[in-house]
Image (cartoon, rainbow, N blue to C red; front, side, top):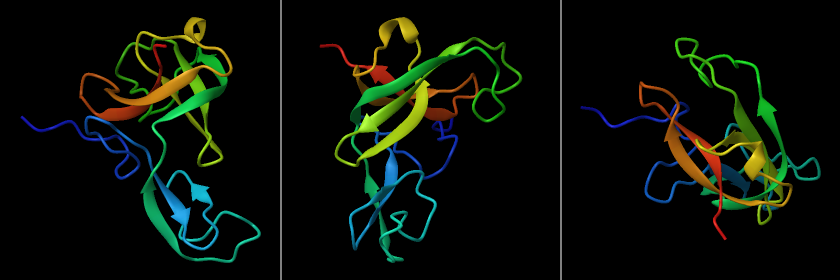
Length: 140
């Protein structure tokens, strides 16, 4: 039996404390996610030197909504019966950025408010076991 694999390679870790993998400019410190560019996203910086870095595991809900439509693969495979889910835009304060992601299984818009603290978790996206990152409200 093989270990479950991330849906998108090198965008997040899957260990006991999963983390999103971003990039950080070595000149000005600006962060980038997803980690796809080789140049600094800061228009005031001309650096071409980016390093991979783990981003904060916790943040606060900046905005959220219900997904009442079926998105395309690989986000929700078309072979599974679609069930609506919540999506949260989460602000990572240290990185000064907002990252969009699904909300963890068992949670919906009823458990979210702007400012709710959330943490990154990794869950299977479907019966295949492929993994995705999601945001789970923290118990306080």
